[in-house]
Image (cartoon, rainbow, N blue to C red; front, side, top):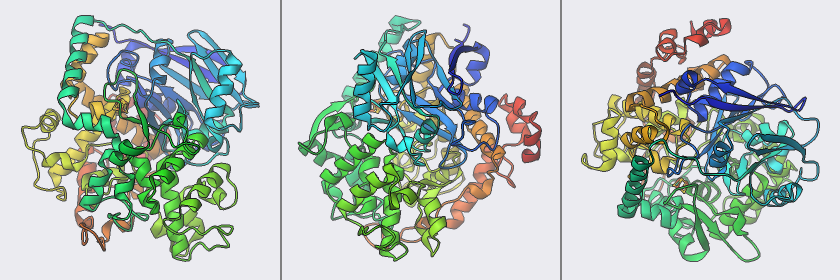
Amino acid sequence: MNFPSANILEVNLTNGTIQKKVLDGDTHRLYPGGSALGTYILLKELKPKVEPLSPENILVFSVSPLTGLPIAGANRITVNTKSPLTGGIGDSQAGGFFAAYLKANGWNSIVFKGKADHPVYLYIDEGKIELRDALNIWGKVTGEAEKLIREDLDEDNVDIAQIGPAGENLVKYANIINMNNRANGRNGTGAVMGSKNLKAIAIKKRLGLKPADPDNFNKLVKEGIQRFNNSKGLRSLGEHGTDGGLISHHKNGFLATRNWKSGYFPEGAENITGTTMTETILKKRDTCYACPIRCKRVVEIEGKVDPIYGGPEYETAASLGSYCGITSLETVSIANQLCNMYGLDTISCGGTIAFAMECYEEGVLTKESTGGIELNFGNDESALTMIELIAKREGIGDLLAEGSYRVAQRLGNGAEKYSMTSKKQEFPAHMPQYKPSLGLIYSVNTFGADHQSSTHDPVLTLPPESEARNNLALLGIRKGYDDNFEMDDEKTRFAFNTQCFESTVDILSLCQFVWGASTELYNPKDLVKFAKYGIGWDTSVYELMEIGERKINMMRYFNAREGFTKEDDTLPQRVFEPFQDGPSKGVALDREKYEKAKETYYEIAGWDKKTGNPTEGKLKRLSLGWLINDLQMKRVLN
Ligand code: SF4
C-alpha cells in the first residue's frame, strides 16, 4: 500500500496568499500527522532564534491519517509553534470535532506564516478557502465571537477554533478554543495566533470518511463499545469526568494544594470533586467525535455559568481550586468559564494565580502592588478578578500574564522558589512526589511539565495479569512495583518507553483516555489493526514506537538549536522538600534517585550526557540524518 500523502494548506497572512502543498506518502509515513508533522514543518520552515510573537514565527495545525474516521478518541487537533511561554517547541492537543471536520474537508495541516495587517479569520469549505475580515469580532469573548462568525458567513453549520481576548493581548499562556470549551492549552499557542492578527478558523462541518476495510473496521468499533460497557473505570470516567479522581488524589495526600505547599485539601476536596459536580450542577455529558466515553462536562448555574462554556476538568478543578485554596465548586466553574471565554490555559492561569497568592502571603507582593486586591489563598473574589485582569493585561494582570517563572525573575526577593514550573511552564496537577517517573518526564520533556507525555507510575502497582500491565508488556515493560515511590533503572525505562508511545498517541491525534498505554478501551495492537483496516497501513508496534521516539528527538533538536541543554531539565526545589501535613506527611521526591534517573534517561534515549542533546548517531538511526547537515546544529551536537 502507498502511504497517503498529506495535503497542507499554507496561508501567508502578510500578503494574503493561500496555496496547497502536498507532502509525499513516504515522507508522511516518517512524520504521520499531529505533532510529528507539525514539528517536521517547523524544522523545515522556521529559522532558529525567531522571536515567538514576531511575524516570522509559524503556527501549524495538524491531524493524522486516521483522523476523520469514526474511531473513538482518534480526532484531536494538534498545534505546534515556537512557544512564547517556554521559548522552545510548542505542542498542544484539543478534542472535539474540529480535527475530523478539517480532515473531511480534505486537509491534513494548515500552516500560518507572517502577520495580517488587520484582524482576520480563515474560512475553509473544502477547496474554497478565504481570509475574511475579523475587525468587528476582535475583542469579543469566544461565545460572542462564534455567533458573529456564523452571522458573517450566514452559515450555522461551521465549527470554529479561535482565540479570545487573552490571545489578542498576547498573554503568554493564552490558548486556542474550539466549541467554546475545548482547548489547545499549554505553551501559549493562542498568543502566537494573536500576534498574527488571526482571530479564528471556521470550518464547514463535514464528516463521512470511509475505512479501507469496513467489515474488519466495524468489528473493532463494536469491540470497543463492548469493552467500554464492561469497564467500570471507563464508565466512571464517563459518569463523573476526569474530575472524578480528584478526591482520591486528596485522600492519598497528593492533591496539589495552596501552590503545592501541601498535598492535602480537607476543607475543599469533597466540594470540587467530580462526583459532587455530577450530583449538583452537571447539565449533561458531552463527547468528541465517535467516542462512547463522553467524559466532557457541561455545567450550568443559573445567571452565573452558561453551559456553552462546558465544565471543569480535573486539571482545572485542581489548578483553579486546590492550588488557590478555593473550596467552592461554583467559583471553580465560574473560573473555568472565564478562562474559556477569554481563551486562557486553566493550568498556567491557576498556577500563576496560586504563585501570586503565595507571594502575597509571604510579603513579596503587597496590597499596593496588587492594586488594592487582597490576594490571599482561598479568596474567591480575588481569584476571579485576577483571571479578568490577566486576560485584559490590566493592573497586576499585565505582570501575571507573563507566567509565574518570569514574574518570579522580575520580583526577586525569594519569589523564585514559589514558581512551580519546568521550562517556564506551570505544573499540571499530578505530583512528582507521588509519581516520580512522571516528575522525571516533567523535567526532560521538550515542551515543559506535561502530564500526558508518559504513563503514570500507579499503573505499575496493578496485577501483572491486568489489561494495563499487558499493554505495558507490549511496550517492553514487565516489572511491577509494590508502591509508587521507587525510582530505579527499570522505572526510568518505563518512563522513556511510555513517553515514546504517548508521543505516538499525540502524533496520531489520539486521546490518552482511549489509547494511552494504561487504558482499557484499545491497546497498542488494536492501533496496528485500526491502521490496517482504517487506511490500509501495514504497521507494527515497533514502527509506532519508533515514530514516537523520532518526534521526541526532533523536538529535542528544535530546542537544542534554540540553546536548550540538560541544564534546562530541572524541577523546582519544593518537590524535594517533605510535606508537613496530611497522609503524605514526610514524603518528598528523592533528589539523588531523581538525578541518577535523569542520567539513565539520557543514556536510554541515546543522547549526549554532557549536553542532553541527541547524538548524530541517534539522529541517523531515526532517519533524521538530514538535520545534521545544518551547520549550526553540528556545533550544538558535537
Ligand atoms: S475520552 Fe473524553 S476527551 Fe477522550 S475522546 Fe472521549 S470524550 Fe473526548
